[in-house]
Image (tube, rainbow over all chains, first blue to last red; front, side, top):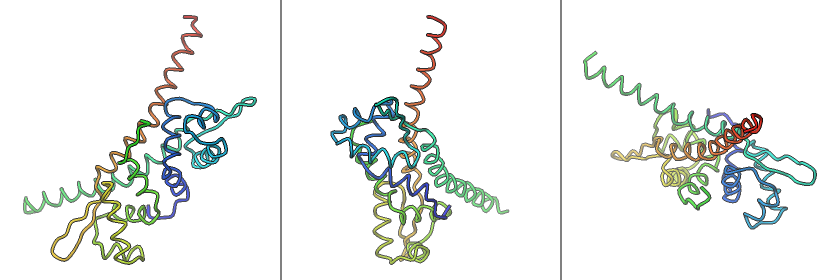
Length: 111
Length: 111
């Protein structure tokens, strides 16, 4: 778990930016076009394109071009990785709490 | 979900830093002292203190002073919030996929 994981680094770097999280808020409601995304965030097409590239690279978002329109949507696999990270970092600790509880119980019983 | 949430902002800011994530890696294995944490990360006590303050403020870590020794441990509540964020951003979309599936089924049946 302490090993360097470039995928996790990319993921948290992507999520560290409030505009990118606002884009995810928007996309989690429904897929939309790049143009509408730029309008809703009040940023340029170039800026939204840069944010989308980062979100795509870490697997949180997918974009698809149909004709002249590029549509963006949430890519659940990226969220799976994040959920796994959360589970790993919390559950190990909870497991240790359980073990500690077991040791204390044994001590109480005088085992 | 698009509303500004200072707690989520603090959380992702805290997690955006690789040293802070390394501290969480370490603490998820077992609680430890500030001194040992600084040694394991190869950083000064001042630096580890600053990182811990940020991790405490967003609820991911707890520190407790006993005598002259400060011990740090994972605080699961902070991880709950993160897990909720992940679920909200993915499940809304999955729900919509389900609904879309239902609509397509209806169309196929000619309802």
